[in-house]
Amino acid sequence: MYEEFKDMLLYTSIPYDIFVVLSDTINRFGRNYYAGWSESISAQNQLLLTLMTLTLNCKDLDLAQRFDVSRATVSNIFNTFIHVLHELLFAGTTNVSMPSQRKCKGSMPKTFESIDAVEIAQAIPHDLDKQTRVYSNYKSRHTVKAVTAVAPNGALTFATELYPGSVSDVAIVNHCHLARQFEAGDLILADKGFTIHDLLTQGVHVNIPPFLSGKSQFTPEEAKICYKVARARIHVERANERIKKFDILNHVPANYRPISPKIFQVCCALINLQAPLIKEVAENIKPKTLSADHRDHVTPEIPVNKSELKYTI
Image 1: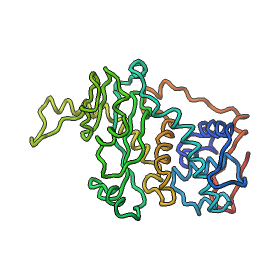
Image 2: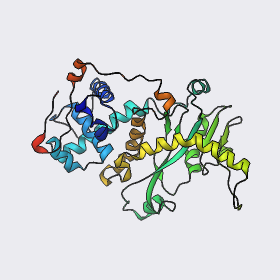
Image 3: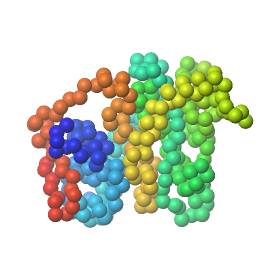
Image 4: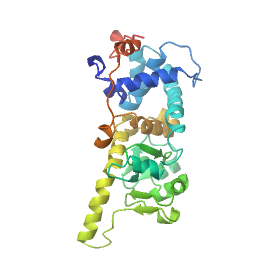
């Protein structure tokens, strides 16, 4: 990566070459803006603004000063591009269907399909009834949660919408019909909260760590099973950690709460554009250096403050 682009991961969570491809792809499609539009910054910088909001949870006023636009324009761009990115990266690719057993075996890096739940914070609702539903006793705060699934190669293949923090993992799996996507012969590794055996069709197996059930310690055989499950499930934990690194998910602002499910799912889709989670997968991918011509085609500069605003298209 060129020295001048070393901060792209910090600001956007994706490498520069992926940013260029994503920007070029978006430019091929028309956009209907959330609140009308009189163009004042380039489409590339609109994408940059959106990714900075997701990655760093920059405030609208801060971005308005950085990009020399109004606060309303920042909100208009973000609302619009979340829907664009959701349609482009999530709706047509993720949640369509689980990878087949043949595909999984072809990319099996000593692990299995795993499912888990991700819990994130958001602004406290004003409605008292909604406050009760989103309060998580486990987290001791108001949260929303979703269920994610990770394939053997570390790719995130499924992410639900957001549910109130008080809803159980099993209830989410039942409501989103995730269990229907598995076929006989599939093996699922899941956390202890996913006692979903009754929801699965015949021939689908779920492997969860054993419970102590009043015992002081596991038997040697149970401890061995725990170790094997934990070793395989570490990849889904790492995927969830990448999701949580999007600062906007630490506290979704109140003005973006209506689109918070799409915000979450876009963040999930973006981790598939990052470096592979698993070393065995990464070793099979040879990094490609952008040519000088491609580099000069789009050269984004991260605006630090109003006096340093520069955009090279």
